[in-house]
Every structure is written in C-alpha cells, then in structure tokens.
Image (cartoon, rainbow, N blue to C red; front, top):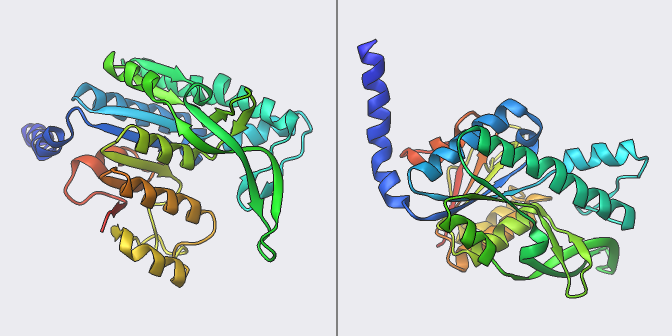
Length: 292
C-alpha cells in the first residue's frame, strides 16, 4: 500500500515542472471523434480538463458533433452528403447543425464539467466568429462547388472567451459562425480551433481524435511520429503521410504555429487521460508539432 502511495506522489512530482511552466497559459482543446460518442470518455476527459483548470491552466474547448448531427438528419429523413470532407449544408441542414451542436453536444460537455466540480461556460461560435461563404473545388478542374451554408472564418472576437477565463470558467464553444447579415454558417471544428487558438494567443492547441497521432503508416498504430517540425510538413505531404482530411487540419496547425501558438498536439481521445499524459509527462503519448 505504501509503495502505491509513493508511486502516486512520484507522478505528481514528475508533473510539477509542467504545471509551473503552463500555469496561467491558455490551452485550446478540440474535442471530437469517437470520444464525443462515449459518455465514459467524456466524463474522464472533462474531469481531466477540470483538473487542468484547478492547477492554474486556462483550458478552452472547441467541439465537433458530426455523428450526432448525421444521426439527427437521418431521423428527419434529410440526406447527408460530403464533398471534399465538408458537409453539404442546405437550409434544413444548417438548422439541424445549429440545434444539435448547441442543445446536445455543447450541453453534454458543459454538464460533464459541472459534474466534475468545474464551471463550464457555453459560448456559441456565432457570437465569436465572422465568416464568409466557403466554396469547395473540383479536384480536376478547380471549378468552385457550392456546398451551401459552410463558412470560412474571416474574423474572431474572443472577448467573451477571455471574460469566461477571468471568472475561472471553462469555455465550451460550438463551431458555428455568422456573416455580417446574420446568416449562420457551419464551420469545420478543426479550423475553428486553429482560428481561436491564434486569436487567443494560446500556448498549446490540442486535438483529441480517433488516432494516436500522425502515423507514418496509417494502417500501423505503432508507426507514430512523436515530433514533427513545420519545415517537414511539405515533405510529409509529398510522401502521402499527410493526406486527405488531414491536410486542412495540418495547414491550420502550421498557420497557428506561425502566428504564435507554441505547440500543437494530436492525441488519441479514446485513451484515458491522454490529455494529461501528453501535457504533464516528458515523453507524451501523441504527435507534437513545433515551429521550425
């Protein structure tokens, strides 16, 4: 029993320099993938994030909700269609997206924070982000493709986020935006997280997803690349290691690093306590991306 208690104390002392280093620093966490569908994982992740706030960090959550949105659209007999990884969002779909993100996904995460003894602040991306209509492109001709009410962020006003942080609340933000006429747009949650990390001058940007990190061989989870520098990204794209849906995310990460974010982490949200292991241990458990 005594050795077990000593082991727990050793873990705390190992984390001490990281706790000191990141005290009062903003960490933007993009929460999505399978972790959003598992109530046990949500409970554990929110508890870890509450712990981060309790020891002096300033976590900010940006969440997705793709599977819940797709399920709701199916219930309503509304077709789900994707083009180049982006959900085609017509008038009916944007209403469903808005409803599910705010009244299901966001409430679920805020509830998890409250259950863990923290203070969660629900903040709509519509209050923070301004957007213009985004067009996809035909892969062969480059011609624009209309994908409906999908937006490209053109500005971010993060005063409401900073106000919540000043009151020691954990902001939980939906990936939606409005244009200057009040039209609501669906925003890729990875993109929203990158833009908010830049606007907040976050110390870290963390993506919790369904894979351990960036894999040299997508079929082999043991081929994890632990560290990538931004100068290596073009070569990894050329080799096909970074491809498909990863490209917009990685480009957003590179831009965030260029604009002042110190580190980006990609970790497996299915692994219990992966967030704490990545931030508060020497070796981490995912892929870190650094400028240079």
